[in-house]
Length: 144
Image (cartoon, rainbow, N blue to C red):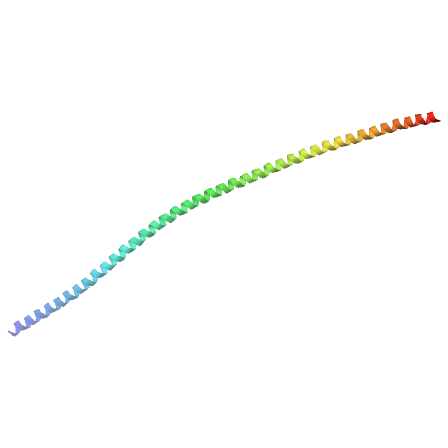
C-alpha cells in the first residue's frame, strides 16, 4: 500500500510538474503570439513606410529628371543667345567699320570738292586781280 501511495504520489508529482510545464508553455505561447502580432504590425507599418518612401523617391527622381531636362534646355538657350550676341557684335563691328569707311570716303570727297572750290576761287580771284590790274593800268594810261 505504501508503495502504491508513493507511486501515486510520484505520478501526481510528475503530473503536477507536467502541468506546470504546460502552463508555462501556454504562457510563453501567449507571449510569443503577442510578440508575433507586434512584429507583424511593425512589419506591415515598415513595408507601408518603405512603399511610401519608394513612391516619394520615384517622384523625386522624375522631378529631378524633369528639372535636369529643363536645365539642359536652358543651357542650350543660353548658348544660342551667346552665339546670337557674338554674331550681333561681329555684325555691328562690320557695320561700324563700313559706316566709318563711308564717312571717311564722303569726308575725303567733301574736302576734295571744298579744296577744288577754294582753288577755283583763288584762281578766279587771281584772274580778276590780273584783269583789274590791267584795266586800272589801262585807265591810268588814259588819264595820263
